Length: 142
Image (cartoon, rainbow, N blue to C red; front, side, top):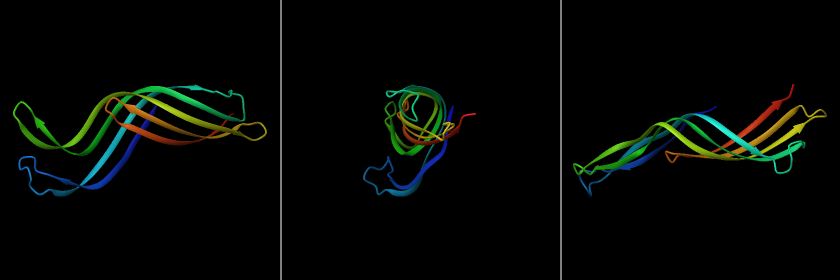
């Protein structure tokens, strides 16, 4: 299970009135945010073996979840009425996606009970959201 939340980006964007082409734009502050909760399944391949002190491995898998994303203002047109509007881009709902990862774990100590590692992963979902993540792992075997 993975949860990502609170990521946001703020910037100033020029917004134009879609009803008046050629009119001057207005600068507005815009905040982009993304929150998600995913159920993930990842499989690993150890090309150099799984029993070494330093383990490099590749991962791949998929996930399903629910996300809520606010984006930047977009001009939209309703082709039935031929009217344009300015809307804040918003996606909310269930999604599915795939993921790939590169991992490196190091076992420490005489008994190799401690583990430190890192992981970088790339995810892409059906809404077209792409995420690049970096993770640090610390573990102890009992």
